[in-house]
Amino acid sequence: AGTLGAAAAQSGRYFGTAIAASRLGDSTYSTIAGREFNMVTAENEMKPDATEPQRGQFNFSSGDQIYNWATQRGMKVRGHTLAWHSQQPGWMQSLSGSSLRQAMIDHINGVMAHYKGKLAYWDVVNEAFNEDGSRRNSNLQGTGNDWIEVAFRTARNADPSVKLCYNDYNIENWSYGKTQGVYRMIQDFKSRGVPIDCVGLQTHFTGGSSLPSNFQTTLSSFAALGVDVALTEVDVTNASTSQYAGLTQACLNVSRCVGITVWGVRDSDSWRSGESPLLFDGGGNKKAAYTSVLNAL
Ligand code: XIL
Image 1: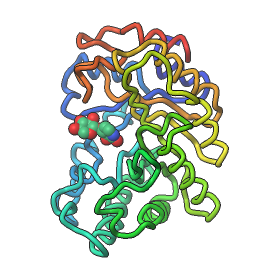
Image 2 (image 1 turned 30 degrees about the horizontal axis):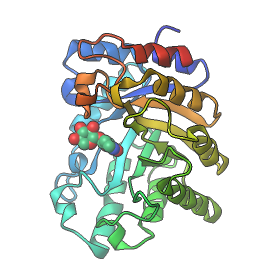
Image 3 (image 1 turned 45 degrees about the vertical axis):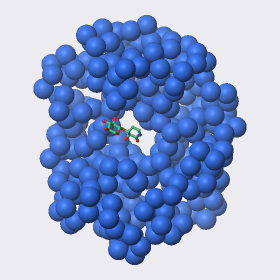
């Protein structure tokens, strides 16, 4: 196959990218994105500060712009994200306790109602753990340790058709505290019937030329709990070809690894643009890492 999306589809997987609504008018950008990918994540446009700028007043204009662009081209969409310590609107940042808990529930219900039946996945909760595997201290954590399961139960009721994911970074190395902390939470949720369908590994790799140890073991271990796994925000320092090929191969080796999403199109579009971490250079040319991924798919 001649594109990332078509190559991934040969094994029933998708290959996605983060899209920024503000860049869709750039024809080089939209031409590459429209050609190569078959899954889209809004880079910022479906986050809480974008979708509920004032309490109870929802704004889906830029999220819908991305949703419409993607679905008009036959692509699917991952929702990102409903409950997160970062990129909260100002009014939410200043809440705590039961009023924040209710605001979280209302936010999930409001956003999911708008996109009901339309999305393939939702990142319900993002980045809730510390590096040592304990829970991250945040205003949401301050509402009680059960905030994550309440978020997932609320999400399942709001839209039973969409797969519900927990998403985090630095959970790629199996022998790392944070990976184990997230693993234990998923295991606990599965044993108690808390609704969860997938784990997203952001896969922001920094430095080095080889994969974090046991990356494939991490994918297969999560999958063995009965959830899908996905690489949701891939970027790699200097686009190491061996790391890009290795992470692609690791996903292909795990049947429940459903797809790979890179966190932007060209290096110049990246939140880590100084590290040239993506598959296309600033001019829109395919990099060596692009070929290494395409050949591995
Ligand atoms: C980043 C975006 O790429 C930036 O444009 C924004 O300024 C900050 O957020 N983990 C996530 C993503 O889950 O939402 C983040 O995206 C990158 C880290």
